[in-house]
Structures are given as C-alpha cells and as structure tokens.
Picture (tube, rainbow, N blue to C red):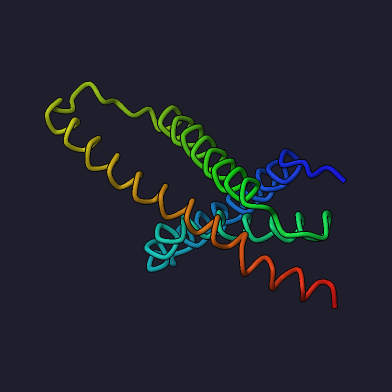
Length: 151
C-alpha cells in the first residue's frame, strides 16, 4: 500500500480552515457582545486551530494506513502543514489589510524595518517550534494513538 502525503495535507488544510473560521466567528461574536475580556484569550490561541488540525490529520493518517509515519514522512507532514499554515495566514492577513484599507504610506521606514526584523525573528522561532512539535507528535504520541485505535 502506497502512502500519500497529499491526502493527509489536504485533510489538514480542510480542518485548519474550518477550525480557524469557527474560532474567528466565536471571537467576533464574544467581543461584539460585551465579552471584551476574552480578547486576550483569542489572540493567544492563534496556534490552537493548528494543533487541533494537526491532531485530526494524524488521526486520519493512522486510521487510513494503520501505521505510524516513517521518518521522511514525518518531516514531509510537519513541513507541509507549516507551509499551509503560513500560506493561509499570509492570505488572511492580506485580505484583512485590503478590507480595513490599511495605509502604510505614513509609516516611518526605519521603524518599519525594525518591526519587520523583530517580527521575522519571532516568526522563525514559531516556525522552529511548530516543526519540532509536529515531528515529535508524529512519533511516540502517534504510536500510542495507533495502539489505542487497534484495541
């Protein structure tokens, strides 16, 4: 049986979009309804849809193939999910800027360079964390999930 990484990445993409949309709607409704104290929770939980989607993708992979991903597949799935995450995040950010009509012509270029450098360093740390967590999760936790599903 050949194992297709594409179907697992498509599953991740679908779950990620749906869960992110649900979180966005909940955040919008709660902040509009006077529950403004929940704003920090929703801004801190940006990684929660990624983790839930990764878990569901792993569960789907294990159920479909009845095996744990090999080392090469673990890297492919981890990096593929990360690419999907950032692709969707960039597209959503650009759509948000277009909708809000953001005007960056008044921004000081020195401050913008500093902001981009700080943001770039922060994003690199998040990237490393997500790849390592994804690779780890596809190892021992996935093995435990497989043994639980085979009972």
